[in-house]
Image: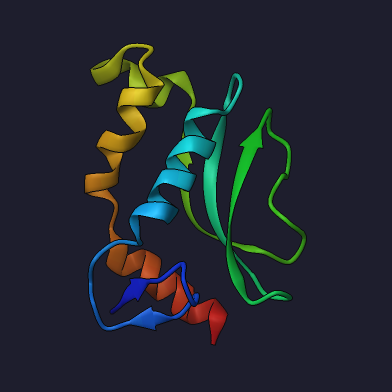
Length: 112
């Protein structure tokens, strides 16, 4: 499996997670959700690029035709047991348990 590169939206053979810039963007989007929702990394096929979206209040805020590759739950039930109401502490902490090989597999299957 590979690595998602936000620079050129291609998979390399490095199994590491995405760049710091993409990480910062996805964390900011997820932490910034007002109320209930998710931060999502998606593949947008028309522009052939990765996009970061906020999904809130059960709305479909991911662009039409885009495929979610990774979704981070920002609802209180996701972070409350370990982080109480500290969403800003929860989202960076979850980064270390994401299965990047699976995210890369999803990317490869849709970006062809």
